[in-house]
Amino acid sequence: MLSLTKKTGYGLIALSHLAGLGEGSLASAREIADLFGLPTALMMNVLKELASAGFVESIRGARGGYRLLRKPEQISVAELVTVLEGPIRSSGCVAGRHEFDEGQCAVVDSCPLADPVHKVQRKISDFLRRLNLAEIAEPARSGGKIFKKQGKRNARQTADIHG
Image (tube, rainbow, N blue to C red; front, side, top):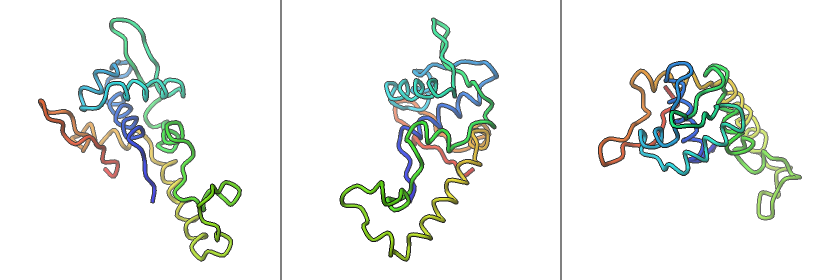
């Protein structure tokens, strides 16, 4: 129902990694990408967007990199998703009739599923607003399921946000 892009997954991985570093510690986009076997160019773009949105600070120079600007408890997953993907939406009819593109559902006014779909959308949005980076980063720091690159072959490149 709700699908997040690789970009958001990479954002969660980067922020979780930065949250696991000591306060004020830095990590470069290349370091994070190499550590998790992710494309460096995409990681750089994601971190630039996160910096523009005020999640991280970019420090230039030979010993530069990125660091969190806010405490992990203050960063909601909903905020992150909105910054990297736009408003959270699970289906076309949730957007409202005025936002329908051609070819989308035209029977929303009489659809028996419209109200339940709206309820599910609200619950998902509420959950993502309550879920914060600290809750995602902690399982990763304590042996959770953010997988790092292993040798020449890549480990799984996903984050288990279910703890």
